[in-house]
Image 1 (cartoon, rainbow, N blue to C red):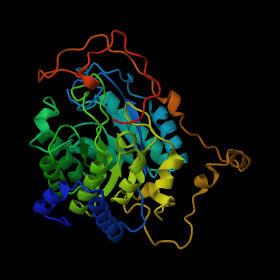
Image 2: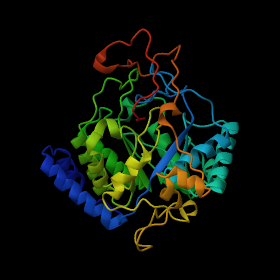
Image 3: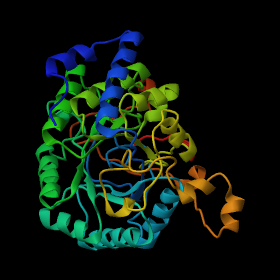
Image 4: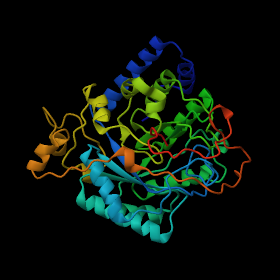
Length: 403
């Protein structure tokens, strides 16, 4: 579907500063969201199945071996571990589950583990299934589909004109080739990026219209949560009203896409998260992110139900990646067996229902990097206030979530 606004109007809207003007824009985006998606939602969760030691130089990412930031470090999980994370996500109310690994691609052995993990999730849960495993060929994309994956995530990260500032080792054209391979294999596409990497407002418009040409099924929006010791580690958070404004603009440019807000939403939006939902979101990424911690599932669900949106799951969720939680199929309350027991664990136990929820305080373990090579682009790693790193960085065990 074509954008609802022109590039010229998007540039004009991007300059809005007055809060009343932004609220009017939010109402416009909300109307577009209701027209094209009704009360449907699409809540996801992910597992960081392989973390740390990435060979690429993406300037926002603590997992890069060129970053001095601490990050969780572990080899690829076993398929059974991926399944346990999926079960926890389903119990928390997620509609879909994504298996994520760092780097441009996987070895044959690791790829086979991801395939087995996908089979287990398809067999033992009713979750929609996604993967984010770097670049891939058509044959690998088809293998993912055969294993039960329905959607593949692969971001463009930013506007093409700004991309060289974000990464020099992962080529923009390679990202587009992977997206094409995913589509050729008959899989849905999930393509988005990160705001506040230093791009201009004009480049945000550029990225949105580039995404419109790609026409992905799903568009995840991240708001930079600056990681100390990365290239962008000294950036300030985005003003929350600015963030809400851009979510609404993206919604008007991509009216049919399933929008979700991912990393950095608590730090950048704070109390305006519900307003961001009204600005056009179909869902959020629930739980923990790749290297930082998330918020609680009940808070995430409430942001949507307070607007009259339907967070219930459907019996055929696992077999139908889209439409997501369709509007108007049933009258009255949506049946949600697990959801009925989320806040009453004693009753769940009595009914023979086992609910396993994640514990954010113990979910991530950080590891200090002992040797960090210089970045290929020659840029320095930065810390808040441009201060040098401490001699012994504190162990990070309870950070807010982000990327």
